[in-house]
Length: 114
Length: 281
Image 1 (cartoon, rainbow over the protein chains, first blue to last red):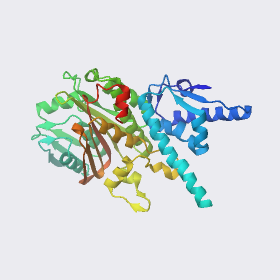
Image 2: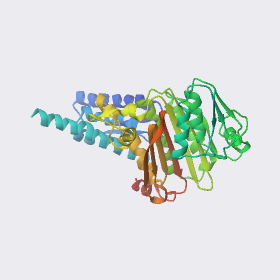
Image 3: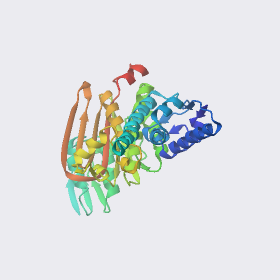
């Protein structure tokens, strides 16, 4: 399954939180549809025609997924492809932040509850 | 009405910003007298524009020397039809905060599209552009500022370019405030915001905290310089010639907002391939 970012956000500039949310909603919708069909396949989120990105956009469309889904699940089924090198760097930072924020804090809650 | 004799040099240094921020404290009409001014760095026009934007009073500029007037006109700090025949300025522009995409296009056209950038590799210009867009996004998300003012200057001999992004309203301290039950100083607030993963949005269970850490990352790898001045905080990070010099100082006067001044080296790393370039980050 391939999602064309430029088409989904109606722009080749991926720098706004709002456009990030549009992409997030599209990814989540795809995951839900796959759930309903009972089949899981990798989602390729294709940035090939996107000229510009910033961390704000990735926080919204990708980082926030870590709030709802497990790390292993995200890394198995969602792959952002055809990013420019600067996009890879931004994504790396966002992923690290999301892991420490959502995943580590979830562990803290579990440890506290037990 | 108060008359201020401006100093001889207005440069990107602690002394200049300390002086200029003092001008923001006046609550009456102000005459800026340039009689003794010999040198002004182009991007200082952004601070002067912010001063006018901030003041409810009249600000009059007098006795501007011929060469300084030329600079002001080329930067469009003073309205003029004069074109920049030296082709070294990035003219001052006011951006509305809800126009991030327009700002990105402005960066592409006016900064990266400047003829002085023609020889700079795309990988390098993308890094520079991302830094500016991250800062704009930070202002949008963390302050209540309605506008951002930017401008800059190319220094041909030094092969450097300085670009400033400034906004009024909230300081770093007002945004960061109290963390972990500890009241931060103004300079501690700037340092906190520069650290990866630190975000004021965490309190609302939202993700943030990458933008400014990327700024430090990229500018250090570029052998560049950046200054953040906000409130009374003055944070200067100089990575020129592969070194690292950090200066943290308290200003005598508080600036009612934030200014980020970035100087990038237009020669460093330019021969590296994309892969090699990103390995350095």
